[in-house]
Length: 221
Image (cartoon, rainbow, N blue to C red; front, side):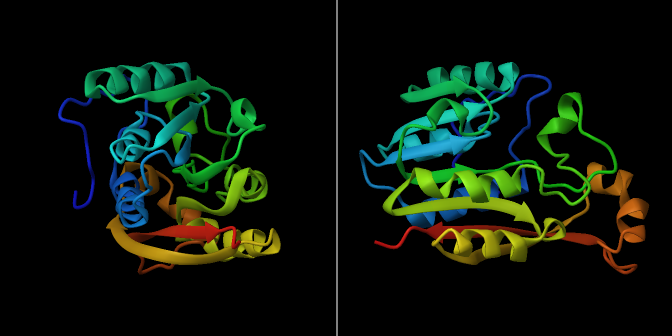
């Protein structure tokens, strides 16, 4: 995957979201952002720790958070294997870090519209019937944690309303825009609920690919 800075040795425990096209797209945006050494970076929903480790390679001061115990173990293992200093906390989104501020916040949250509440592994991608179960919370809770000039970068599907994300972030006083787009073939998850998505009008009859977008939001000084 172009632009995906994976460690030399990288492990993903069973039940943990493995780096995919959305990870690669956000990693490219991170590379473009290039946080300077010492920049305070937060990776929420870190999963395997791929993005947290990518930020740590720039010399950033990185904290990673995930609600899954297996994800926390996986990220800690990969940080150890990569010999990179990353603080990894278990908790729900910004809960463990609500009293801190950051230069850069990264997020690759669940964003796939789902007919039912996600359980087990599917919690890594299922995000309610509109796909915004966590996106709305990120757009609401991330802005107060940004330093002046700080940046929020996150990836989502076009199926889960990028326009709504931009509206919420701009309403919070941030300068927000879609900075990257990529079309990818349907994976197993979308294939399994393709008819449901078409019935809801989220997919056109001719659609065979999903569009991913990266949203960049900056707290303007």
